[in-house]
Length: 259
Image (cartoon, rainbow, N blue to C red):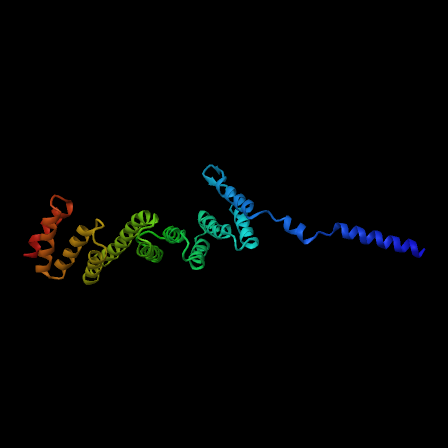
């Protein structure tokens, strides 16, 4: 009887030992960094569109890239995986998460060649959250400040070409915002406040195609404020520099008001 019990115990122990996996076997179950990374890339690139809907499985892609980071933290692919995660969030319009990853990438890898790319993408994340010119422009200013940093720190990077186009668009939006506020004050007969906004457009956002409009409206404000000589000077500048335009025609009608 004792021999039979001993034999059963040995059999159970042997069976248990056979089921247990060794550390080497556990490690072997984790795919290589290259495999995990490529799986994530394929998930990002192979998404299909259905009636304009993006059906990319971004969450699974992020999981693959996170697996690279968790299991191969010292691999070059782990660094690229961080960037891919940021791009995945950006593609989903999850801009706060994307911004967090782009910023962290620059902080962790300040000398990496992709840092200018992360700065441009950060600016684009703010850009996509920017509102119409008649609304709050906090995100617009954040986008512009970010671009200023890119252009200043990396003036020769490939990203600067796109950054300069976006920079002009953002500045134009801010200039239009100032014009709209000026128009609000002008309509409300708050001429000094309106004049301050129009001057801001001329001083801070010159050369964006809004100079003539800002000049004309500033002249109108001065006319209402009985600052006739200043108004005359502004209208004459418009007549000299914008001859043949609608604004020049309007200025011509107001020149006598400055007499």
